[in-house]
Length: 316
Image (cartoon, rainbow, N blue to C red; front, side, top):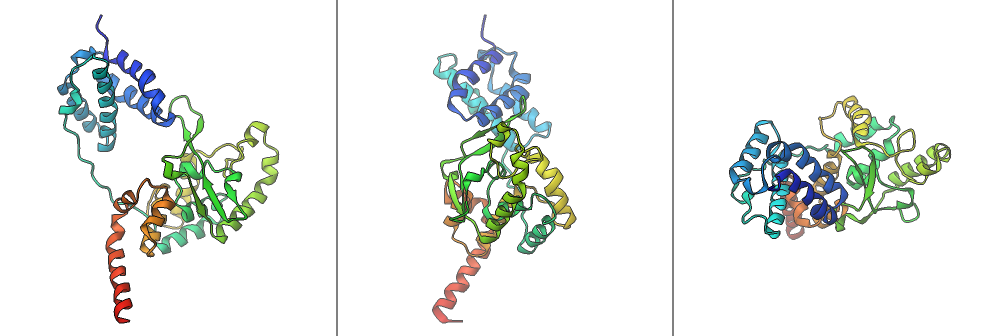
């Protein structure tokens, strides 16, 4: 009996994808296969899947309102599976090669202005997670990075923190696990200003009694920022119960929790900070990524550079 596409995908996921990619990426692959690919193509025989079938899958995903990014990600998963089938001499060509993909629309980046950032932090002072938000804005860390911080990552003597891991929440089966940071450049050390160090020191003292009462398994996590039970904070809870209420209380623009990172980068670049320094702060793989992501700041940077050069040359 000919191998069904559904059975092949299971085999490919377990034997090829799983050993090669991070657990968080594998979870995303599984979700794509389970929710989008199998329902449309799973019953077909592997050798019967044609470019038309794959194109129809992408078109149907678009009609359902799925983003171009999701469709392109599904395409990458599907194409990788087909490529392996070709290596195993099960197919001759990759049906994905002849498919058209939706263009990625560049969405307008949202971030707080300097005054809005000050208003947000002022409103956040009454929230128990004020130290978290203060740190997030000063460092530009990703949520999965600052929610994975342990006290050993904070160097109070050197006024710095080290990013050594990230937290990932499982979509399937629940729970969480810690993993390596997103890229090699994501493993980084970031200097902390006195305001952040002071806030973290106060936070450590304020939560000491609570931490001492935790069961050994939870206490061993040694997390800087936790829920009431001492467990890791779920990003959704941080967003819905703390970030949104603070943002709305201050009557600020409707930006996302992740946009605090964009706020950090934008404010640093707009203040004239070297793009390489910003790239290192964000843990970007290259300075090109930083400049491309934050291209909206470039016109202002160019104008400021011209003004500085004129002052240097002519003293005006």
